[in-house]
Length: 73
Image 1 (cartoon, rainbow, N blue to C red):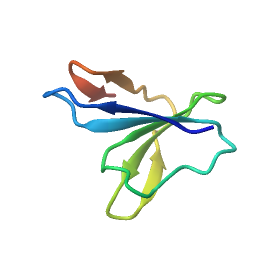
Image 2: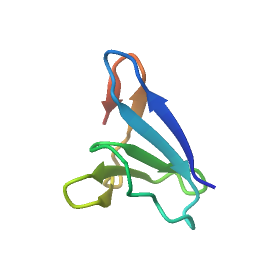
Image 3: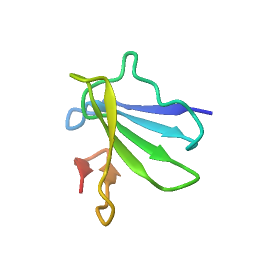
Image 4: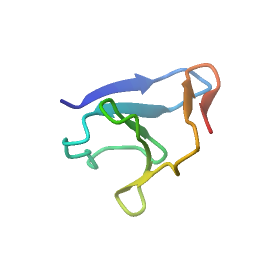
């Protein structure tokens, strides 16, 4: 169950992906810096389009997705 939220405001160009930890995270057509949140674990990932890889946000960090100001840690 993977779902997407596209941000198209002037301040933020990106993609918010929500999935379960058991889902395969998509890599096709995903923009650099996209965010993925596993809804069952709360883990966050950022997408690296150069390497087609999702990187886990380090433990203890927090990711805030705000359409007005972008993604912050």
